[in-house]
Amino acid sequence: MCLGVPGKVTQIYREHDVLMGEVDFGGVTKNVCLEHVPQVRIGQYVIVHVGFGLSILDEAEANQVFAFLEGMRQAQEPGVQEAV
Amino acid sequence: MKFLEEYRDPAAAKKLRRAIQAATTKPWTIMEVCGGQTHTIVKYGLEELLPQGIELLHGPGCPVCVTPLEMIDKAIRIASQPDVIFCSFGDMIRVPGSHRDLSAVKAAGGDVRIVYSPLDSLQIAQEHPDKSVVFFAVGFETTAPANAMAVWQAKRRGLENFSMLVSQVLVPPAMTAILSSPSHRVQGFLAAGHVCAVMGYEEYIPLAQRFNVPIVVTGFEPLDLLEGIYRCICMLEAGRSGVENQYSRVVSRPGNLPARRLIEDVFEVTDRTWRGIGMIPRSGLGLAPSYARFDAERRFDLSDIHVCESPACISGQILQGLKKPRECPAFGRQCTPRTPLGATMVSGEGACAAYYHYSPPSDCLACRLAPGAADGGRTGCKPA
Ligand code: SF4
Image 1 (cartoon, rainbow over the protein chains, first blue to last red):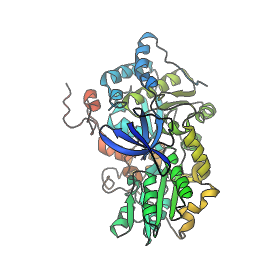
Image 2: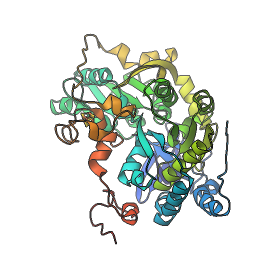
Image 3: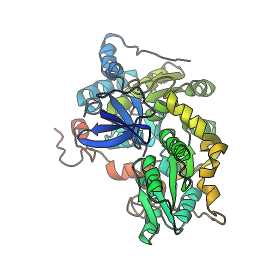
Image 4: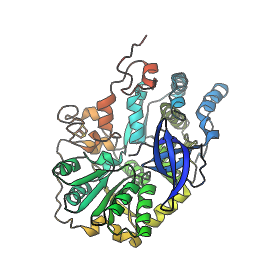
């Protein structure tokens, strides 16, 4: 149940006064609760766990791994965040 | 599928592998916390890509595996009552209790239903006002927002025939317990990306400081894991502790604030027993007093439950990273996914099941990462 998967929001609606959406997982559509990602827009991708959107995928950050690989060729040190 | 396939690219994986090799001068032991990560590591044979001396330990992050036996027995007791509809995520149905599992209750005529979302069980409660509908709320911080929403909705909609059997667990106290154990071997952690998507990663900063370990918040695809391992090794080699976020496309520092607020409203932190590990203080969530009337443990008589664990199963040591599944004498013999002796063999996130299904993987990296290589690329792989 812990396996969250990304899917694309194709519709947003309300049911029993709960924010819901249709989310497409590569051809399979499911109804997903969007109450925890209320700012989501149609066309965005969300990580879904047990029928709930938990996080909106950040397109700008999505290339981070590849940018990281590129940067690694230039400098040997990786970027550091929050080092204690 | 966008946001999945690009993180399985074999050429990028090879680059990361080379970078890991170049960065490594000493042996290191790293624990991935989450069972979903264990699954990717074993499925794609990522451990075999690492330099000799880099060992991955599989952590306790499988909710099915750590749900205490007593809770499974309570679920079985409730589900066996007449006029009860017992709803559960599918992976709990075949987890062995002391004497039987929920699928046996269903076979004997009990109304046990598998639901995709906890909201489905609310719908069932609404459609069956004459029945008592109980939802088995298990999981880590990833299921807590969903389960909290179900109770919150039940209260708002006045669904008094709905209740929850709650066995929520929390990851940071389990990491603390592992690091506090004198026999632990963990030098660095890959933290569970989706847990942090909900809770953020601020809680891990004092933990890294206190135990002087690096913690890298990591995603679930092969490239995520290789990058997480790379960053963890770089920190270990440099003698640095602290928290880095590899999974920034999903995880922000504060996490999901609406979800956290709802969890705080509906649940309160409690002590919890973890199957195979024991009691960990303040490591779980139970219903807060204002939601106590939705607590299934108060509605049903659950006295006189005497638990009886299989003596052969060493899953507790596996969940703490002290042993690997193949070290269990029952692995693949008495214990298989069809005849599981322990929960780690049932769940898709359990380490024993991952080893049973996927290892040893193919020798060929391109085959392992190929789309549709559901078996780790073993079938149809012809390494050059
Ligand atoms: S192989 Fe089976 S018996 Fe052994 S630890 Fe895993 S679940 Fe338990």
